[in-house]
Image (cartoon, rainbow over all chains, first blue to last red):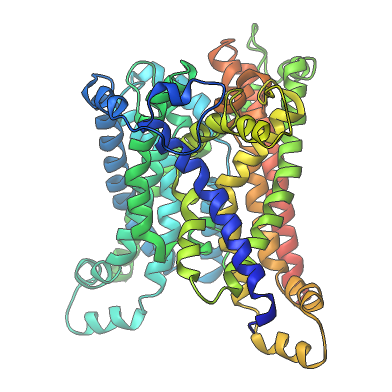
Length: 271
Length: 285
């Protein structure tokens, strides 16, 4: 049903939406390459009047970029691996549960995504202080798993459900034992789903702010470093750091475009 | 018999790590947060309403509660409205649909903290919005957007709208795609105008998707944290940032736990309402 007489409206609307979406991004990237006299004025310019790479050079050469960048990379990668390692086997079992049980477990996973971080982060921060896990990568990976595990499990239950039980039975008839069925048949078949879930987990950890804020005193992650520069009112640093944080995100999200579906992201009850 | 036992042992072993983790790092911390909120600060007396009494006498807390409720109520309505508009645009677009979809989805990927950075440039007192407004001749002196009160709430509404509308759009777009063309065509044959078709066919059939978007967004809106922290700071507290500053600045984990527990209560109420609605719909169907 394409009512043709309303067509100009749809195009006009898309233009407005696209502008509203892109303008803030444009301003940020522009700020990271603008000379100070374009920004620190009561009348900032909208166009790019002059380009400078001074902020980028300063940030890339400074001591304050690489340690947070390294920590963010390491934590995100470990979170991704641990989330898959823990959630994938469990998700398989959940996907084969009889319906009322499966519904209950999925509901539990959904609910655990909904709890406010400030509520969990508080007791965790108190406990981690005692255990010496504050500022450690292990502590932050554990905290990020709180967010990512239910999400990854949720996506993977869907992937495993798509694999018919008949395939497993066929492999068993061919003489595969239970473990063999899982490692040689089921998990290889679920690999695309695992990859997508892993990338989402990586992204979520890379962007994560609240737990990092509670669990870091000295060793910042990249998002915390941005927050630090915002509180200091340092426009160029925060613009440059924010751009650095965003670039991998945009790349990964662009690769995941096909999988950006309501059911995945909402992690909600199946329609 | 031993084979069956072995089979279930393997399943249990595969399920165990996830269960243990969620128990130790989600269920127990939540419980200890609730317990902490009912523990008296000095005497460690339990249970006690002391922390809650103190909160409700704290003007900052009352402000935070008010802001959180306004941000959720106004914010979610606005997001549903705009999200529905964008979803309709994407659904009806023929040419360039993929491109527009890609652009519209960008904020979904942008980290919230970065969204905060971007909007500090727009809403700073020497920021781009003031410049635009003064060039258009609307204002003569720059407006201080983030000083608190309604203007700051507006700033947060716009920033949150930018960040989360794509999610609403995705949910509603999925909903729109389930509506059969035949229904709309039949109405068109019967002489219904575009607006009437939208009002009497599309909207009612979209109700499940709208409900889901509403609840998901409400839960997220209650938890809003980074944007107020970055954009408006102390001037516009919300429950999340209040819980954070109670703990880190006033060294009062008890008050922080009480604020977080209240937040949990709000979210739980929201979730229950949704599950109740879904259950009722299943019964009706």
